[in-house]
Image (cartoon, rainbow, N blue to C red):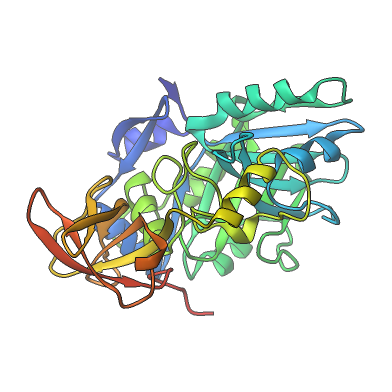
Amino acid sequence: MKKSPLHDIHTRLGAKMVEFAGWNMPVMYRSIIEEHVHTRTKCSVFDVSHMGRLRVRGDDAFDLLQRLCTRNLDGMEPGVCRYSHMCKEDGGILDDLIVSRYEDDWGIVCNASNRDKIVAWIRSQIGRQRVELVDETLETAMVALQGPLAMELAKAMIPIDLSGVKRYRFTSGVYMFTRYTIFRSGYTGEDGYEVVVPVGVVKLLASQLFGEGPDATIRPAGLGARDTLRLEAGMPLYGHELGEDIDSVSAGQAWCVDLEKDFVGAEAMRRAQSAGRARTLVGLELEGRRTARQHFAVLHGGQRVGEVTSGCLSPTLGKSIAMALIAPEHAESGTELGVDFGGRPNPARVVKLPFYKRAK
């Protein structure tokens, strides 16, 4: 397994380490609920160095990415990043990713589990175009500060002017001979920053961020809390809400698809849109405190109408929540459904996503 550059810090802090997408990563330090609540109320730091970090360079870099991404990248100014999908010809989602416009090239942050696939896919699509793809994942590290106090704490601790960095914007440059990129983004439903620096200096940064003790304002959090946080925020996870067997529109992600432009998979999505979706993504609130698991059947009148993609007992709401892909005719908010817990249907109802939305 690959190890994060911060692996020694995780083990010193007593993190429970697990294999994730070929990496040895911390799933939690204290408890998932405690880390979740700390993120919602104060600020947590997540090691996300396992995620893929790619650079796309050359005269034809824009043309290539415009053809591969569902999102329209036209008019992106340097310092702007956008969420997008990359799809196959049949519309199946290869990955969801963040595309960033630098001064002279482009950046991509993709899922750890899909990095090799996306690298191979992009290279297979270059053809005769003047494009160079560089995988910087193992040369860099990435940490995310998330929570209501993240903004003020980051501005106090990071010696870079972040005052002009708005949501889904970033700043990059060189400080003390060190190249950096700081994105104002994240995947928890909270505001915050994601910082990318070379492997050789990340421990210096981490020494300021990884607080210890119950009174620390910034504390480390693992992948377990990251998952419950993104679920409350209604954010899809590849391998759950997204995959090669589902198109972007059916996954509830039509907002990141521009069917007015041509991209790989566009024609298939246009046909699917004309024919009508077979399934759509919804939120569910379940009665009781049992947790619905991926692939549990969703029922209406005793008949299967879809399946759960993710579920948890929400630490913020104190309710059992889930996301599910179901037939569109049952997707209206308030619709009474059931979730099959091994032959015993548990009452549930459709609710609007997200389950949780941070205060402005």
